[in-house]
Length: 303
Image (cartoon, rainbow, N blue to C red; front, side):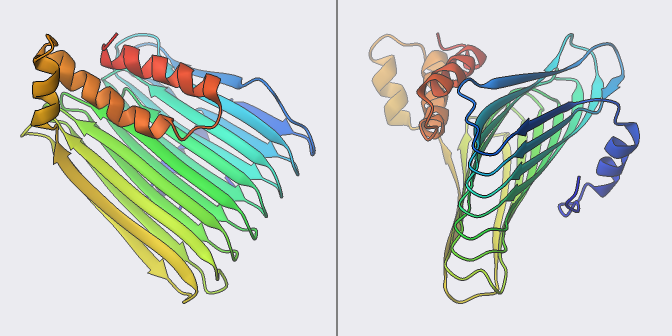
């Protein structure tokens, strides 16, 4: 928690800090490459229970590692989760961090992320929100070294009355750095999503290349997607773009699958599965990609 909380949840960060009793700390020494993924499991159990998980990852120079951070409920009771993860990458480091959130539908959750990326380092962070009744996620990625890169991805299948509220900041401090954000939401029933993201280019960050995109797949007339991408550019020598789209399932695609004997409900779920798999295809590790595709297929019940 070395960086300030800038995206609105200071009081929850303070609560986390006050109640923190455990978590996971991973230090990867310089010039060390960890071949197999490291898995971390965070659990909550019992009615009205609360957990304050903390993950701290420090990657030394020219190191590389993949981490899967699971957040799960052991039952269906209501609970509170207030978690923080800090990711620190030294020069030349490479980190792939995947957060798989599968709290119960009665859980209220806050997940606060802070990432610092030094020169020529690359951080790929994927957030998969499969559970939770109300989930507030905040991701701050600060590019502090020249040639650094941050990839920020999120997949959010939302149904019922669930609500996913995500706030992001791509803060370009150093020159010639790159950030790429892609968040995908599929909304059914009376679900709701909120996205408010900002690309900020500091005065000394010439040569910045930043991209921000949010796509909402609307599966119900009662669903409520809200997207607010934004730019704050304080240097002229940059390339930045941002945008958000909303759209329903293609009726042509539905007709095509129904004409081949696939039920309408399963056809919709197959389309949603393909929608999210387009993002998973960006992951370099084929084994990790296949594993996440398997989790997604099970979650969407399309097997």
